[in-house]
Picture 1 (tube, rainbow, N blue to C red):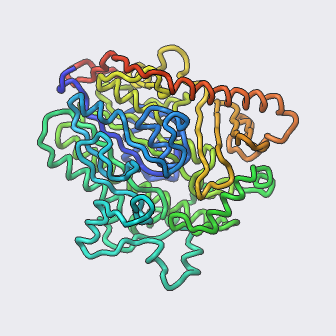
Picture 2 (picture 1 turned 180 degrees about the vertical axis):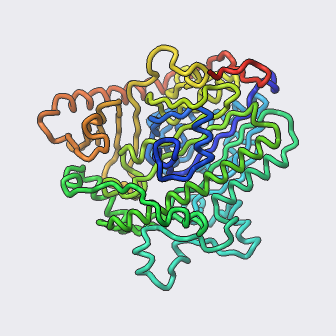
Picture 3 (picture 1 turned 90 degrees about the vertical axis):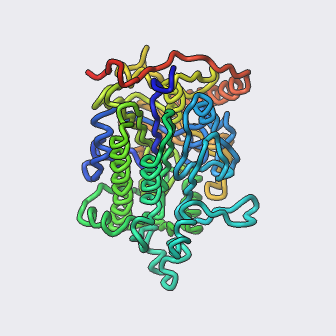
Length: 501
């Protein structure tokens, strides 16, 4: 495959964005015209699930093509670097990252020719043992303007009660263009506008939002001031049926002020609505930047030979099930948007509801670039859906999985494993008699944990057996010799015939 045949690839990944945050994907309260365009002109996978409900573990799977039990990255603190980015570089791709990647160490090259890291919005970055702070590109830009980064250390500094009642919701206080999502989007546009090379490029854009703090600019927050966004109902019966790990997690969120979110045990409906309005405004800010990036791609005549992929590393409970942020296996945390856009060459206005894992974008990208993938990868390509509108032979996955290890926030369980099918979902806590079991047909919102009900004992025990078998076989296969297979290049040369209906 020549460099003219290889498509440019733009991978846009947000942090902590829910699947129900795009208007074209049944979120009528959202204002997302540019993401709607990607949906309407591309392929959207409406049942895409992450392999882990925390940032680093999920991203390690995406960039290594394997589940956490293979990458050995279960929390936000293990070291890791991407693998297949270097393969793209070796295949003549110009590889650049702008924004959030969560590589650890955070400033490692990870196979990219160049990186412009922008990491967490609120917390400082440190080297090992927290010896000294690390400043990213955004920190440097703030300093150049003599601006102080808004954070938990500056907001309501003299009014702790107001801070505690905010639930992590703030209005952006300094220059609008220095909001981290605007900064990343503007930097990506600048890079595309200034680029002189004629080789294909892989551009990974990592928006820091809508990860908390929930801090839109006043302009975007005003768009949601009167919008009545759905807020889930939480009952005492639901909370009582949850495993003990859940209560300890909520206690941690209340006690430790994670990411500027001073969580509350029983937030009011009004508080949850305000939280969701701020979150929605953050998403709409990112949507605006996505539109501006698409405009630059078109202006530079890149768009006809570019695959744009939009996704998120995991989602956010936003008060559902009594939780905030992540660290649980509910769909509101593990299901994320996944959209492919290349309307000259793939299906358009296609919404596919088969089960896929977020890491499946890895072999898909490599197939599109004409690069082989290892035969023991646990990620599976979705290119047949993009090109033909369906899997080659039946659904690619009957189940999706996610794994999570103990950290300083989720401190109650050594290991958590989730398996989800179209109907039943099981969450296993190895070494603990407690767990979660849901009938998603009868209870799509996962409000009724059936784990302790004798009527479901046989189904539950069979599901647990199969989960543990999956884990054992997956670990075994991961340690076998790796053979990278050659693939048939997936030509989306703009001179070739399109595949739209």
